[in-house]
Image 1 (tube, rainbow, N blue to C red):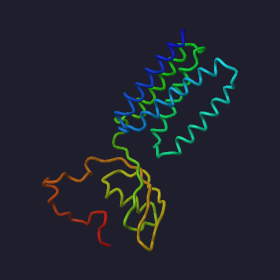
Image 2 (cartoon, one colour):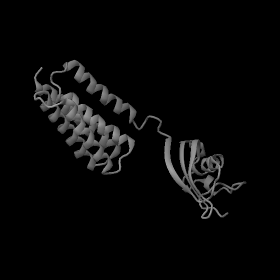
Image 3 (cartoon, helix red, strand yellow):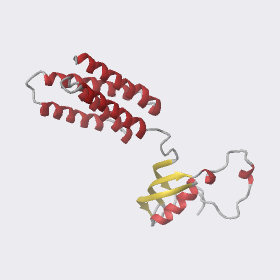
Image 4 (tube, one colour):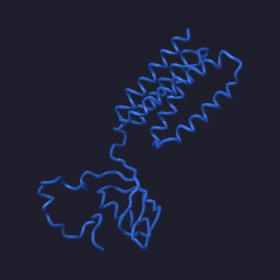
Length: 208
C-alpha cells in the first residue's frame, strides 16, 4: 500500500484524537499544537529512518528525550500525558509503510478506542480525587476521613494525610471519594436549607 495511505490514516486518527476527543473534553487550546506537532514530527522522522541507514534506536531515543523535556516544561495531568503518548504512538504507526496496513490501522483504531473509553466523562462520573487543606489538625486518617465525608457529602474511599501542622492547626490530605446525591447540600432557596440541624454539622472553617 502506498505511503500516502498511511499518512492519510495518521492524519485522520490524530484529528479524531485532538478535535474529537481531547479538546471537547478538556478545553485546553495550547495542547492542540503540541499534539499535532509531535504526531506529524514523529511520523515524518520515522518514515525517514525507514528509508535511511539511521539507527531506529537512535531516533526513538531522540524522541524520548524530547518527550521528557516537553513533559517537564509545563504542568500536565495524567490524562493529558496519555493523550501525548497516544499522539506519538499514532505517528510511529503512520510512519512505517512497510508494516501491514491491516495491523497498523487496527492498532490506530485500538488506541483511539482506549482513549475514548478510558477518558469518557460518563465513566465513574461521581468519583473524585483531589488534595485538600483542612483548617483542623487531624493526626489520624480515620478522623480526617470522617470529617471529609460530612464536609463533601461523599463516600470517602481513601484519605492519605500528607502534612499535619499542629501549630497552625491545618492538615493537608489527599482524598479519593465518590459523591453521594442524598448527602449533597440542598440548593439555595430549598426548604431543607432552612431547617436547623439537630446536631453540629462538619463545616469548613467552623469555630473550634
